[in-house]
Length: 115
Length: 116
Image 1 (cartoon, chains in turn yellow, red):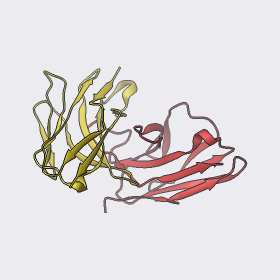
Image 2 (tube, one colour):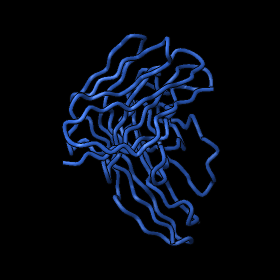
Image 3 (cartoon, rainbow over the protein chains, first blue to last red):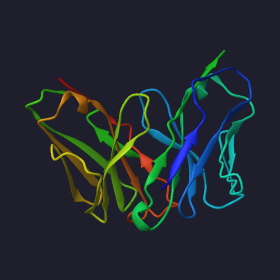
């Protein structure tokens, strides 16, 4: 089956620190990979995505590279801000069969950034 | 317009009540979803509509009844819920039918449901 493993949180950083949130996956088939962010009291927003190996998704200073050889999609940001405090979900989607493009989520990582 | 709207934002109901949640999108998306999210957990898929037909029911109890009146609207009818059904209910939509794997799902802000 399909699964996503995210680094355990919570993660607490000071403003301007470097952020890495690890994400690894297993999938039957060829997945697309996503990072979603959920701010307090809100729904999920797509942060970035990658649909094939070696693709790099980027948005708002966040980056993640689809690494097929290590089955990973780690999220990075060079300098975090207080406004980045949120829950981050790694997810995958595989077309066809019983997966029908269903999103499989990791458990989520709570990020808190202090001034 | 890349927005999915949901009403109400908050809902409190008793175990004998009947209520409905509403979701709307005007992006021309052909797949719409209901998710349930408990605190500090990822969303759990409940239902998927593709081209206004119910395509997926993830073994959800019959006290939850989805409806898709047209391509822009999705409802979730609630009846005889239990306190453990209290959660954030999220609606999402995506461009292709039955969600091509590369499609982004766009989420609404959710309805916070409390069952007393």
